[in-house]
Image 1: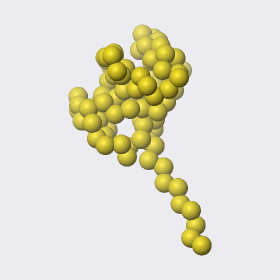
Image 2 (image 1 turned 180 degrees about the vertical axis):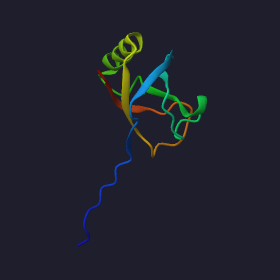
Image 3 (image 1 turned 60 degrees about the vertical axis):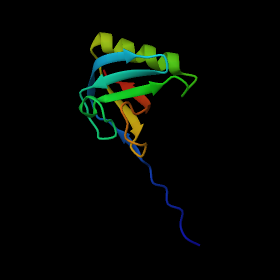
Amino acid sequence: MLPKVCISAQVWSGETTITKLYPTSTDYIFNVSYSNSVSTCDGGTRFSIRKTYSDNYNALVSSLIAAFIAGKKITFVFDDSQAANCFPYIDRFQILP
């Protein structure tokens, strides 16, 4: 019997600053100072929260707005195995003190 191997493709961004908020009718898009090649727009700095992703969408978006207004840094998680696109979806984020 072979051992079961679990490979996680989740990546933490590291501390970053929110530079722009860009709400749309389907996603809440935002830009940060961090960049990754999974994001193909704005030099890899554009990410999003999917509106249909979670029951916590409103809480996620309002927390992101509050962090932006307060000038707080965040760190967020995304799956880097998703196809590279203009605004890849994040999974969750932390607002740093």
